[in-house]
Image (spheres, one colour):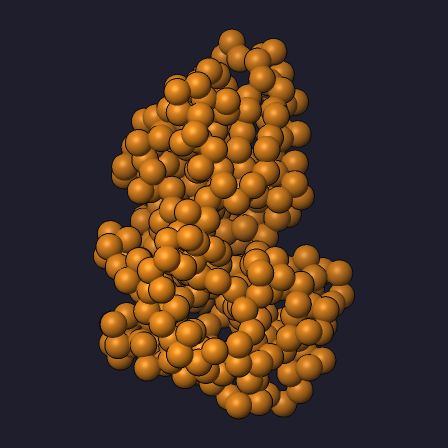
Length: 354
């Protein structure tokens, strides 16, 4: 079991847990003056190389805006968090990229030695719990876990949260993936343990996980994209996915809907960091200042269905407002300390039932 976990840990995407229990007025501007963010000087004509975990559809609007505004040319290599970190480690003596953009902070934070200290000028505008307290990783996106449901297949089956996933009618019809290799799946594992453990105690959530793994009936998809695609395509009734995944399908008219988990949600976030020894440090700093600016964050929420990290970006209604979600507070370091043990225990359950 240990070998299996070790094999996947390097690719494991996970995100740092944050508490977003703040007053609703903060999300509507809350009295803080908006700062127009300068992007830097003397960087026109440089080439900024980025390793990114995002898709092209998400990244391109930011790239276009930044290139037009600064005259900087961006080269971007897309890969998962594990592979990008492995590449950064391998290139440490001679860095080939300037930025790591995206990726779960549970995976990135233990590798903080790979990154340079930098604090964005927008730090005063970050939501509580989204601050760059380590000095190396700037939070750019918040996120909630949710369930994606195929309405054609679900029929009268009630699906409001995790408890409903134990329904025998869903046996073998639940889409999920390896929590050792997927940020989305690991975050759901954490969320399930907290939400289904009595008193939100994650160590009391394993009886639920045992029943959940049994109801998967041996189904484990190869990646997080297969989860939302499988639900949209009618292969599965319900999928455990990340917040932004279902909305493009909904816009396209697919028979899907989302459910924010009735038992509560552990918030997560994603970040950006400058690679230690970056050749284009000034451009990298300017990029971080740009992606945390009001303009970029508002565009992201409005057009890309991502939850901003700033307090002053209002909701346009696509995502459920922070004030309407039952957030479950969770301690970041506690999760990091227990990550490997929880993954081992999950795989013990998986092997027991398959």
